[in-house]
Length: 507
Image (cartoon, rainbow, N blue to C red):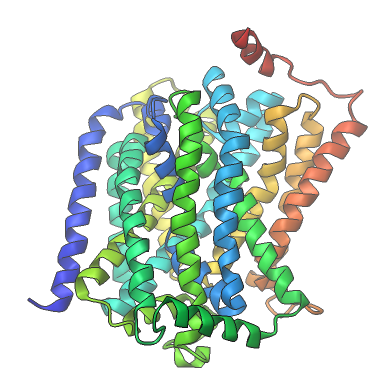
């Protein structure tokens, strides 16, 4: 049997299996509530795996793992550790229980609805909806690029064809079954990711180029020391760690995973499972990226041109490792699983938010829940089409993701986190935090589109500093939320009733 045929058969089995799960789940997804939160009855394993598979995709395995490993050597594993400790363990401890409680008691199905009910502002909801829909598109596009770079190298398939196939797979899961299908598919895909990452680590470490664990670690340690990382590199490294770890605290598609958890017991169990998942998948993924300099001495050795060459480091490493065709098929399924699950989460979040919080509110005020679910599916198609269009550009994966995470987390992390626990944050403070964080995170995007030659001393081109500006945006947003709320405390009212329901229920 032809080697590539084996790979295609492996991938085909996966797609058929996931498609079956989606179709079977479609019967339980009739209303907009079913489509978004799936009955709020998810257990720990489903919720934790859904969180992890939404977190980690080909963007991490291909874009970030390759880019950070090449730039920082062995230090490039730090983002993976940060993702597990800060982005998973601490995130669940701080956000999950409180989010589940408040969203359930107030029948909240999206982040814009949370802000509207907390601050009593429809304009704030509209602003949040617009930012989430528009700036999740480049994140979605980065997932396409991450997976297609692998398929094009290992299978020799045109990237545009790969993108179309991936888009169809994501659309089947989302449109057929919505949240219920996505979370069940995520559990299966999460299991595939865990097994695939472990097999991938052993396969790469046993390759002739690496020469085993001890030789590989010694060699990459020497390569890392030879990089002689300076001040700007260390700042860039920690900016990446913080953006990819704390940044998830403000991403609506990640926060959304807490809405459907069954009870607080499942939250506690989910915290452990999610952290374990992240240590294996993120830690393993970034570790593989640190080995890139053992395979290449210069980016000029990698096929292709332009700034996006680091997107092809991992695919070419796999191609050079002489991995068996069956294992290549498993690895492709790993990357497809990771990417399709992330695409599903992003698409559901963006489309349902736009449908519930803009179309229904502004254009189509109806209580026909089934019709709203249908509209949401149409919006899903539009979102996927826009993502496909953006993905055909030449922006590197790492840049697109940092632009998206920086603007969304910079805008919403601080007001959301403070709102969960403090009654002192008022609408003026929340607005200041949102607008301030949005403005601070925007320069890299503007420079990428219109002013690519602008640079800063020591740090280089602004268009390449998405992570730096994302961290500044989150910090500035916190300061503005607290400062403006304190300065305007006497002239602003706080929605005390937002917390009353929870407190009375606990008595």
